[in-house]
Image (cartoon, rainbow, N blue to C red; front, side):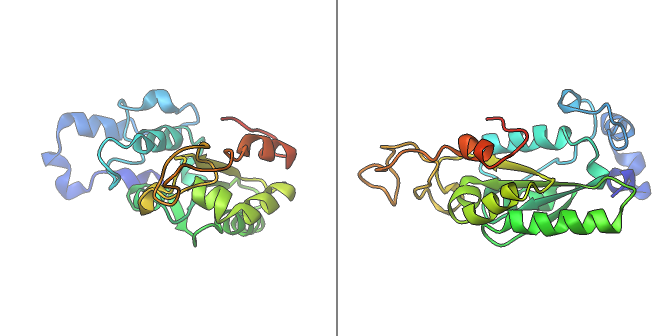
Length: 206
């Protein structure tokens, strides 16, 4: 991954608006001072997506991507869900894993990158919904945490399976009505931050 990935093709350069040319010139690739405050002032790593109109997840994606310290040396691992609709539009190396095994894939990937590039830091970031992280993939999420694998896990807590129509999730609030919980969810919301801390994660934020 390099800045070349977001350059304007030479044959189109003269017809691109000056404002867009300026955004590309001030792209934040290779600039360690880059961050979310650059949103709107520099070429972003995502410009479009196929999420539902008004979905707040799209804004979360922009903030996450703008906060990557080394996007050119980062691989993002996603899972089946709403995130899988965004990754094809992101100018960062990414992998779409099977539903729920994103942390297992990230574990192997991080170890392989460490062996392949011993003198260069390669970051791995998992980005998945609550279904993949807590319900279907909880075993692989926990095992990665228990082993102290050196990558970041970000869970989009939709509090339901948003991509497949709104089914009940372990992170859904008790009493919430959904297609698979027509009279309301009967058990409490899984306390993921507490589980992460008890599993030995070094940095947990909600």
